[in-house]
Image 1 (cartoon, rainbow, N blue to C red):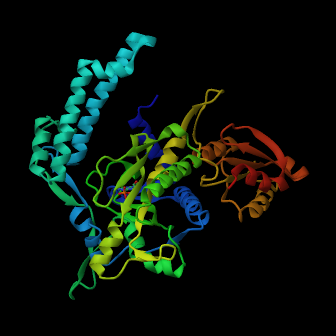
Image 2 (cartoon, rainbow, N blue to C red; image 1 turned 90 degrees about the horizontal axis):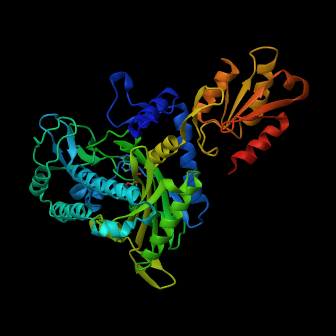
Image 3 (cartoon, rainbow, N blue to C red; image 1 turned 180 degrees about the horizontal axis):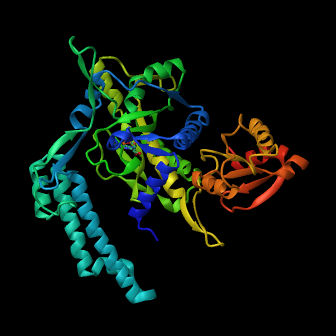
Amino acid sequence: MASNEELFKKIIAHAKEYGFVFPSSEIYDGLSAVYDYGPFGVELKNNIKAYWWKSMVQYHENIVGLDSAIFMHPTVWKASGHVDAFNDPMIDNKDSKKRYRADVLVEDFILKIEDKIEKEVDKAANRFGDTFDEKMFRETNPRVQENLKKIEEIKQRFYPALERNDLADVKLLIEELGIVCPISGSRNWTDVRQFNLMFSTQMGSVNEDANAIYLRPETAQGIFVNFLNVQKSARMKIPFGIAQIGKAFRNEIVARQFLFRMREFEQMEMQFFVRPGEEMKWYSYWKEERMKWHLSLGMSEDKYRFHDHDKLAHYANAAADIEFEFPIGFKEIEGIHSRTDFDLGAHQEYSGKKMQYFDPELNESYVPYVVETSIGLDRTFLAVLSNSYHEEKLEDGSERVVLGIPAHLAPIKAAILPLMKKDGLPEKAKELLDTLKYDYRCFYEEKDTIGKRYRRMDALGTPFCITIDHQSLQDNTVTIRDRDSMKQERIGMDDVSGILREKIGR
Ligand code: GAP
């Protein structure tokens, strides 16, 4: 079996070969952590977007949409705290010249100790069999206890140092723990420095007094500054939400994980405005709702887990991640944050404009509290792609790579394949294509043997292949092949549309 790293490499290669994702500007050797979506990738991405939009905006009568600009007034980012606090502590290894996030180096070190503990527990479980009392073992085994103590000591020192912005102590800790550069193996580190993740550019001509502006690092602020415009124009009553899908940009220090950590990516965010004091109720509500949404994508429950934050961002009074098991391990795919009245309050202060809502039921005005759901579109794409990638050995000894993408998200719903490129079969196939193409993204292909075409459609994740053969000319029937079972069934050509509707659903 392939290791997770090998599997990840295969998925990246597959994504390129089959037109899902290409490195940006590849002919110039690419641009680090920037990617382009190919003909099948863009379909999958659009399907994920459409499903999220439908679930949030169309299915909730108290949520409306927005498409705000990427460029915003620079003071927005001062008010939001991004200018002062959207930083990562970075450190360089002088020998490999590689740059790392200092917090990631320390957290990886903690993970390694945690791994040691788990190995110790597994070993004991095997040794003692059914009589093994895991809880007691964890509480009493000296090696486990010693490692737990070590983790606690690191955390007690590390997080307060970050909080105090005591970067010298962070460096000292890295040195004391003996953390080495994974590339050079050396401990020859530079000082730790803060690195702001926002990209900036100039607006206006260079000769005139051009102003530095930022490419937005999150879509949320476009929602906050439009809060009253939306509330008034769409006549929304609290509690209500504003949803938006759009690009965000972050100059990530460590960006070596394909679509997982990109410098240009897309977010699907929803800000839910509530009465002050009711935010925890809505926070719990949205945590559950969002997990249900993930499960409705069609991937198994054990691929997901919650991670409640101990350390909260400057704007939050509660926060949790939904984590997905990517080939690189369990990692954040979505954040649910109770952002209090921090953002609206800050914009009120910096702009001098009231950001209040008059609540007719309470007969009072207030700055609403906000619960945010923020999911990465590219990470969701990666979750669907990596989860659906399977290498299968077939009964006849041959192998196939199949993407078991849930049918409702699949880039191509049906391939229309004339068995041969003659005898009127292509014409008959195009007749069928013309009846289906208004409802489903179909793909017509007449090149290669039918077996090769099936394999290609499997590799693209096409759930159904419809083959037109000589019998189709006689009795107006076709065969429909199921991607997962590879079973074929003969059905009437007039029934294809209904069958697709039934099987694809939604
Ligand atoms: N408005 C809140 C916010 O932006 P976040 O946790 O920083 O919160 C939300 O980002 C989501 O955006 C993450 O859960 C992740 O899915 C996605 N995301 C963040 N940074 C990313 C990056 N560099 N590449 C791809 N996706 C990213």
